[in-house]
Amino acid sequence: MQRRTDIRNIAIIAHVDHGKTTLVDCLLRQSGEFRASQLVGEQILDSNELERERGITILAKNIAIPYRGVKINLIDTPGHADFGGEVERVLRMADGALVLVDAAEGPMPQTRFVLSKALEFGLKPVVVINKIDRSDARPDEVLNETFELFVELGADDALADFPYIFSSSREGFATHDFNERGDSMQPLLDLVLESVPGPEIDAEAPLQLLVTTLDWSEYVGRIAIGRIQSGRIARGQRVALLQAGDVEQPAKVSQLYVFAKLGRVEVEEATAGDVVAVVGLEEVEIGDTISDFEIRRPLPRL
Image (spheres, one colour):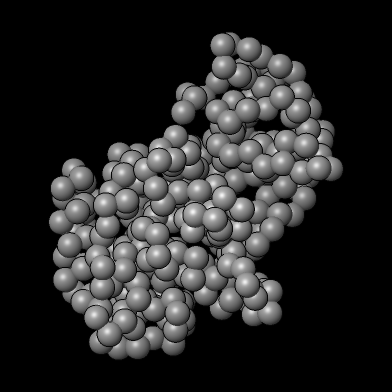
């Protein structure tokens, strides 16, 4: 086993209205990945029609931010316990969790479920106390409340001793001292690289990829999204699709994409540890394993 140093896979955990979408918008804006004019009337994460209607984030999105030679895959999580199945599947793609908490409101009940699962899976947390620009912000107290929540949820000593930072995504800065205004989000990105490990992989093992999300295109049909747990996957490769009820189907990868900035980039091959989108598997379902064709080893379904 080896650890990749060029990728970080991080889930974002936040209560509704604690600034998740604004934070990601800000990170991308500062990395120069889109123009402000592209944001008119629409924020990046909350793009699904049902989400706009309900004002919550349901379907997990994948956004990749390049920073200092590392690709940071940001994996959005549903903000409500109603979507518990998806929460668990999404967290399986991550090695760390960005825990976003409002500096005035503190940790909220809806955050508990997702955070409890992240701790259960041993994800390395980075706590962001956001909205410190609010007139009623109480960042010190909220930090203590967050620590108490970690302890209450059974975090061990290592996870409860979490790294933290303060931010105002609206004003575009992160800072280690809430009494000192920062000038960019760079301290947050640095903290992520320092605190969250890269994925531990075996690139030479047989291919295993758990399908955690499905997308759809009118041009190519179903698109399977997930993290490569082991091995490699390539365009044109014959694979086995391992499904519920011990059903095994032969399949072929017709197109392969990795996430880059706000979109996807087609590649010839991808290696364990990265999150990919696979085209060509017409019968694929969430929870299926995309496996090496010869050595077929299903991953646990969630």
